[in-house]
Amino acid sequence: MLDEEKNIDSRSLTRDLSNDIGRIVPGKTVLLYGSSMVYYTSLIVMKEVLRRLPSLAVVDGANRFDAYRLARMAQIDGRDPLDVLNRVFLSRVFTAFQMDGLLTRGVEPFMSEAGMKVLVVLGLLHTFYDEQISVREAEKSLTRINEKFEGMKKNGVSILLAAEN
Image 1 (tube, rainbow, N blue to C red):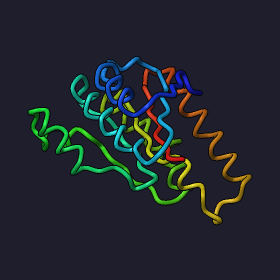
Image 2: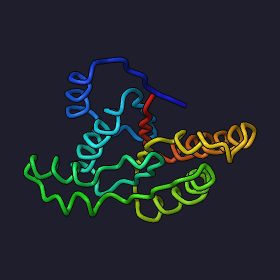
Image 3: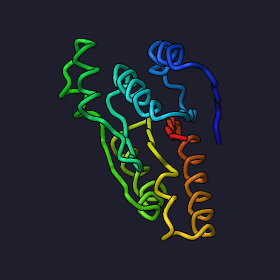
Image 4: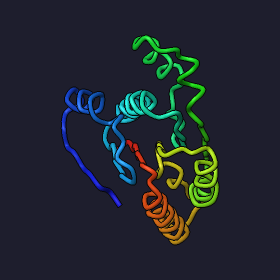
């Protein structure tokens, strides 16, 4: 599923992302995994992507999308914060069942209709750490999500997954 894995310090990661990530490669999946800083880093990615593309979709399963911080980053760059925020389409999910439904049935048609080519998923597994979902159900759900991601990638959608360890 992953196309690229990097193990680097946060300063060089921020520099690399600022220089390169906005140049989205169609159909690529990138995983940011580590401390809670991955969510801050994902905001940098979003800011840079929105320099080059009209909009992006965010699915937040960890309640970590920080609109204020993204707006502040845009403002520091001399961009209109409201314009940047208006181009981020955010869905927050709170259960594994919501995550499954949104990622396997909801997000792709929405993105296709809107012409979006970048999906950011924050805390994909976060919603699965719940005793309400069995291990078997979680495995089936994550298999469906992975299959959907593979199909989206074939259609040129780039996916950024950010997860905290």
